[in-house]
Length: 170
Image 1 (cartoon, helix red, strand yellow):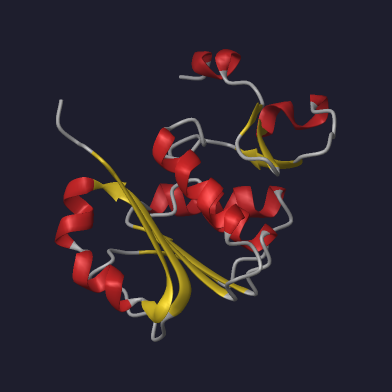
Image 2 (cartoon, helix red, strand yellow):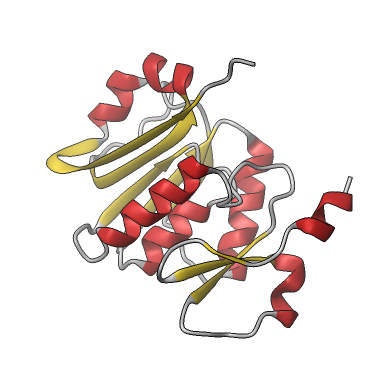
């Protein structure tokens, strides 16, 4: 179950951030880039997948241009952590998978990252009661299509929406 961890090493995610496996936290030498400590057990979002990397780079490029951030399908919480480190004053994240939410909560703690709301639930059934300056949805393509209207309803007019789909077909 943990054999794969031997091959998962720290890497450059963006110009500003490195992803560091939580189990290597003590071995990581701080450099010009900021570390994001991630335990990926039971959740999607190491930063190695192109969709996560793309989203992280976009959030970084928009740093300081948004106050509120919503991470739809947070997985490990990596995008929520990046948003907070890019000066979002309010960060809300959720995932349909309860285990992923637990992993994201722990990852936020390990990164001294305060998330305003981190909950489990389906995008269609969650009522966040507000709109956000930046909404990121890194989901399967099918989930993006099915939930498109709800995801769009979360974004302030004229603000940022970043979607990236992963095909679930073999």
